[in-house]
Image (cartoon, rainbow, N blue to C red; front, side, top):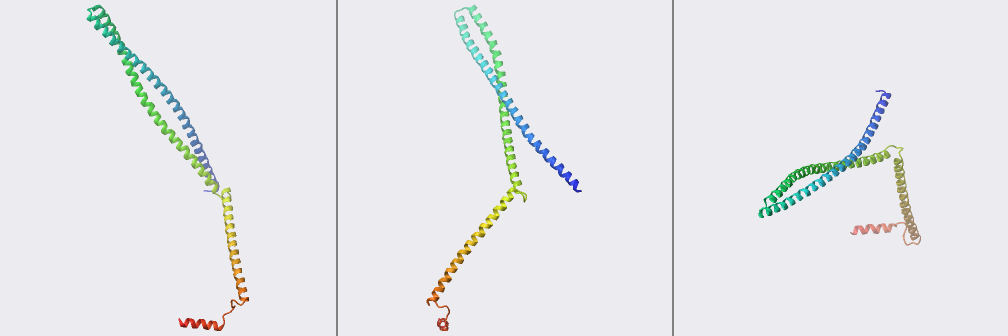
Length: 230
């Protein structure tokens, strides 16, 4: 492949990477929008559930009221029968029959509301759990994306001989090298000063005749005799 072919391939690769980056960025934005819409739908579902619960409770109160009324009129009918008033007992019985019809309708309605409530509760609970997991996954993806962008930025700063980070590191190494050289000079100067002081002291002792500058033959012979005696 010629040089221009390689350049074209590299250009296509760069365009592809840029395109993927745009698509990925748009994917997160689209997902955020879909999550917002799902939140809105979930809020509507909860509102609908609250409405069904309210209607089911109203119907249940109606059922309880009808049952109370039926028990009350049954008591009246029993008293009318006890008094031998068939006409009044029959009228009360007709009233009770009407209440029973209403009670049947209200019970059927209460059952329907109860079933709808149970289904909607299950749907809302499932939607909440799924949406919570989705939000967690999106947060994880966003956090990972931020970390990887930071890592890429650091890697880019470290790469290349002309990068500012590389220049700073080189300057740091030079500074550390100079400091090490300076410390070595300080140590050498201290050692030299100590050696000079020792030499000056030895010279003064020799000049005073306290320390002889050279060993005499007698001294050497005495040392050898001492070794032989051992």
